[in-house]
Image (cartoon, rainbow, N blue to C red; front, side, top):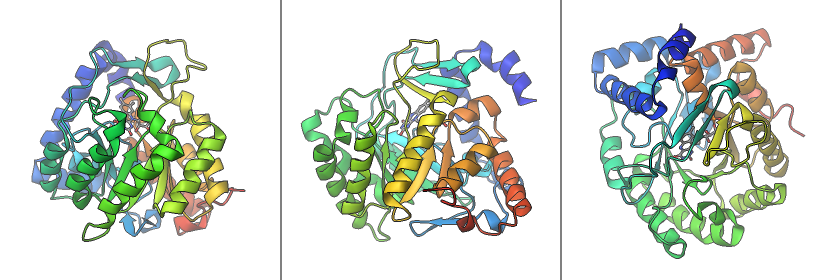
Length: 355
Ligand SMILES: Cc1cc2nc3c(=O)[nH]c(=O)nc-3n(C[C@H](O)[C@H](O)[C@H](O)COP(=O)(O)O)c2cc1C
């Protein structure tokens, strides 16, 4: 049904227009108490076998919505109701900014991929804080992903992230330092350990200072060299971070025909995302929570990521191609597969094929 709607209707319109319209609809669902509760009751993960704990937070299932869809934390409840076990909002910057010029979002339907160069369009940390303080009505686990304001120079990046963290860490179930989007000039330089150390240290101080101590993760790019992946992993351990999210979009165009600039997501990033996950797991074992994202399409991918050592798995591009029941379907099929394999707790399979 969704495939028909996608090919016959949605694919004929500008992808960003469709996105804004969708988010507006979801926002409406988020503020409609009875409907959102009904949808939540039908679609949110309820099977106890799917429950998983990570950095002290109890997730109703392992599969969540990756950052970039709900940039301003406007539809957290709707996305939770649709079956995502958690919603990572953002990337949010300290100051509101418009992002790059349109067009900046491109579908590569044949490759089951997307290229985006949105450039952190968002209403800023203050507006996001107000939106998050209104979230209620259905249980929702919210990750807050923060990034650098474009006009802030690299030399002032730490203060800029700290400002966002100060506003948002108290409202987050976990906080993510995003240093891996390709659409803010210079951002990915912050992944270099000598720049990343002071940044993560400063944000961690803020996250540690909230009443419940907000867990802190860092999100990395698939384009990092293997040694740099190891270096970030070692740094995360050294600083006592809670986890790593791998991966963001890639600047590689291997296997796709489009030459649009921006970050490529979806099926073409699948293999590298899995490779980075495996590398991280072999480096850190179970000392950090690993969140795997990139090219996840179905329950087979989720299963594979769990076996490779991810405690949580996320997706975004798959939502465009598989529609609003995507997360519900993945959780239902995952529960069924667990039963078939005699698995009663996800801890029995997380990292089982890791070296
Ligand atoms: C349109 C779009 C916008 C995105 N914006 C962000 C963002 O603001 N911050 C971020 O950390 N990741 C962002 N991402 C990356 C996703 O969170 C995810 O890491 C990446 O797309 C790989 O997952 P996927 O293949 O399931 O889409 C964005 C992805 C897309 C497709």
